[in-house]
Length: 125
Image (cartoon, rainbow, N blue to C red; front, side):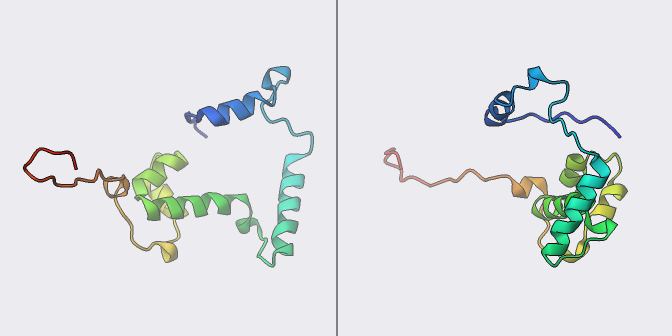
C-alpha cells in the first residue's frame, strides 16, 4: 500500500508512448471485471498446464517466486527493496528457503572489473 517509483528504460518508454496513452484516462485500461476475469482465466491456464490452481497459486505466487529468485541471485535486502517491504520479516515470508542455493551479497553480485597485468615496458596490454 505504498507508492513506488521505478525508472524505465528508453525502449520501454517508447513502447508505452506508441500506445498513445494521452488519448485515454488509464495507461492500461481493462474493460472486464478484474477479479473474475483474471483469477478465472489464470486458473484455467494453470489447470491446462497441469499445475495447481488454488488461491495460493495465483498471481501472488509470481511475486513470491520473484522474491525468492532475486534474494537467491543477490541478497534479501535487494528483494526487500524490490517488493517495497518496510520490514525484512515481511520479505522473509515471501522467500521459499527450499530454493535458496548460493546466496550472495549485493557487492558480490555486481560485475567485477578485470585487471590484466602488463609487463614493465609500458606497452598496452
